[in-house]
Structure formats: structure tokens, C-alpha cells
Amino acid sequence: MRQTEKKHKILESTSISQECDNNILQGKKEVQQNVQQTEKKRRLGPRYSMYGYLFVAPFFIIFLIFQLYPLVYSVYLGFTDFAGLGKDVSFTWENYAELFEDTRFWYSIYNTFLIWIINFIPQIVFAFLFAAIFTSVRLKMRGSGAFKVIYFLPNILTATSVAVLFASMFTFKTGILDQILKATGIISDPNYDLSSDPTGARIVVAFIQFWRYFGSTMLTLAAGMLGINPTLYEAATVDGASKSRMFFSITLPLIRPIVLYTLVTSLLGGLQMFDIPQLFLNGGPEMAGGGKFATETVAVYIYKLAFEGDRLIGYASAASVYLFIIAAVLSVFTFRMFRTKREGQDGLSKKESKAKRSAGRGVQSV
Image 1: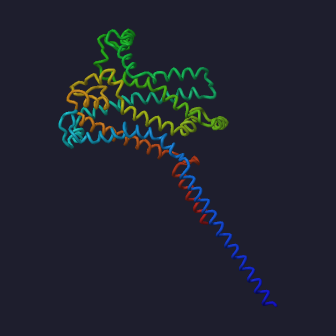
Image 2: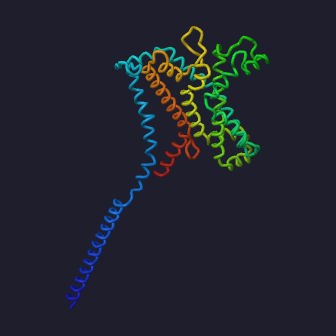
Image 3: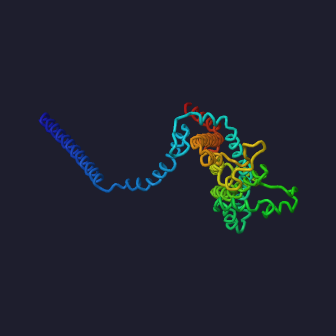
């Protein structure tokens, strides 16, 4: 009797296990069928990702046609003596080699950096100052919005109108600013002509650049300051921190990415400075000794090479490639400079964070 009961139990357990296996197999089949049906519906149904590709396609098409292709083609032209349509073209390395010995090219780069520095240093200083005033919780300046609009207005004016305006104001003997500066004694020489003074021409061009882009820089920095949590300033005030200490310990570190953006965009814009130097004094006046010009930036020099005189388009393309390399190197250097000074999320420097992590690993190992 006991043996028969054991056999019945074994048979029951085996039948139960078989039923479980069958149920599992049936469940797997149903899952596979559901997956296949879902994939079939997805293949036959509307492809929503297609609309995403359609929306981003115009950007890539414009980028390929108007940016990437001209860049690659400029590199190619730099290795040729191309001087216009209908003329023979030959491959040469001389363009890039001659640029190293072209004193006018390197002097144009010197002019570019000099005018940019004269413009950018006061621009960033005054932009910080006005941004701090407009965003100050203590001052609560009335009419700050109107002042922001007024300071930003020069940025939306066309370069042509600005250049013509300042050229007319500094015209010899008839310009209003020329007459005011001489009448007040700021310019003592009555025969002084801005178009023949290299230093004065550079200062005026730098001032025009400052006047045009100061408002934009100030608004960018003000937007970054408004994103800082006010409780940080309240805590610093309770601790007795001064305004200057709060600026250098709270404001400046927290808007460092905004400062990086401002610096890089201003640097790239300065390297491509063309419209005001070209339209104001056509890159002049000529320096003593001849062959060099006071406000001839590298972009103006490239334009003159390509579209004036012998139309040395291949040589101008090589100069453009050099300018691109200089801009890329300076941008990478700026990013790395800010990266080495950047602090971690815990507020510690890189060395301190590394020491903290190593100490934490040591505690875990113990």
C-alpha cells in the first residue's frame, strides 16, 4: 500500500511539473507573439522619428552648403594659385610658406589683437559694473529696463550706418566731434586729422566696437547674475561679508561659464573684425615707412587680397586658414584655462576633490 501511494504521489508531481512546463512554454509563445505583433505594428505604423529628421535637416543642409563646404574649399584654394575664373590653376605650397614671411599679414594680426584688447578690457569691466548695479537687490534701481534697452540699441544698428556716422563726426574741420575736441583743447593741434593719426584711429575704432557690443555683454552678464540664488547673498550678509567679497567669492565663481562664453565669443568676433575698420577708414591710415596700415585687421587684409588688386584668392584662402587655426588654438586654450580653475560640485578644487576621494577609498578599504 505504501509503495502504491508513493507511486501515485510521484505521478501527481510529474504531471504537475509537466503542466507547469507547458504553461511556461505557452507563456513564452504568447510573449513572442505579442512582441512580433508590436514590431509589426511599429513597422507598419507611422514613423514619428522621421519628423525629427525633417525638422533638423534644414540646419544641416545650410551648414553643409554655407559653412563646411566653404571651409574645406578654402583649404583647397590655399594650395593653389587661383586668381579668378577663366585663369589657369596649379597646385602649390608657396602660399602657406610665404605667409610666414609676410610682415603685412602678421602686422594685421597685431592690429587685430591690439584693437580687440583696447575694446574688450573696458567693455568687460563696465559690463560687470553695470550688470551688478542693475541686478543689485539692495539698490533696486528704478528704470533699469529702460537703461538696458538704451545700452543695447547700438548693437542692433548696422555697421554701415555706424561707420558713416562716426566718419562724418570725425571729418577734418567739418566733423562735430573734431570741432568739439579742438575747441575744448583736448586736441591742441588745429591741423590734426584723425585719418592720418594711427593711434587716434585705433582708439576710435576700438571705441566704436566698445560702444556697439557693451550692451550685449552687459545683458549677458546680468542674466547670469540673476540666476544666482539670493539666499547665498543673504547668508554672506549675515556673516558680515562686504560687497567686494561677495562679488569675488559668490558672483564671479557662479557666473564663470557666462564669462567663458563672453570671452570666447568676443575673441572670435574680434578676430573676424572687418566692417568698422573697413568702412570707417578702409584699414588706414598708413604707417610710417609704408606697407602697413594702422586699422587694417586680418579680415580686412584678407578681403583686400581676394577682391582688390591682383585678386590673389589662393593666397587669401591660405591666410583664412591661418586665421581659423589661430582662432581654434585660442579657443581651446581659453577653455582649458577655465577648466583648470573650475571647481567641483562640492565646492572643492580639483586637488582637494582628489584628496577627498582617495581618503574615502582608504576609509572603505579599512
